[in-house]
Length: 101
Image (cartoon, rainbow, N blue to C red; front, side, top):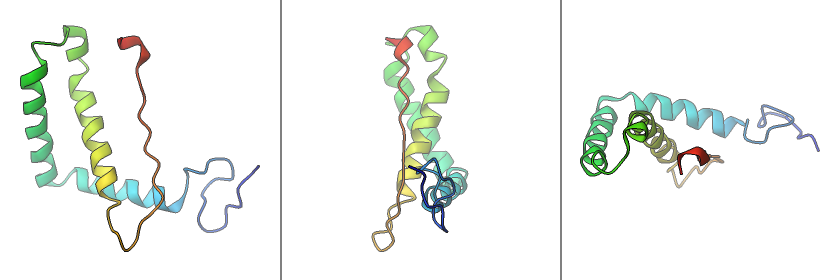
């Protein structure tokens, strides 16, 4: 059933393509590049690396930087939607790599 796009939905077929999602993603991208958020990402990467670099196979460690970045962006995206006076609809999908088991 197609959605009534009106002023909120940006696609008749994809309910995730909406004004809230678009605005939150834009805000998260701006926040993600702030110096304090970059510093927090760097600290998180250092701490995770300390406990994983000896435990993970080299082929999985090669993906570490990308996964840390993805995780930190997801956290930034969720944090962008924390205004209790103006909650918005946000879809956040976690893709699971079934080949890494």
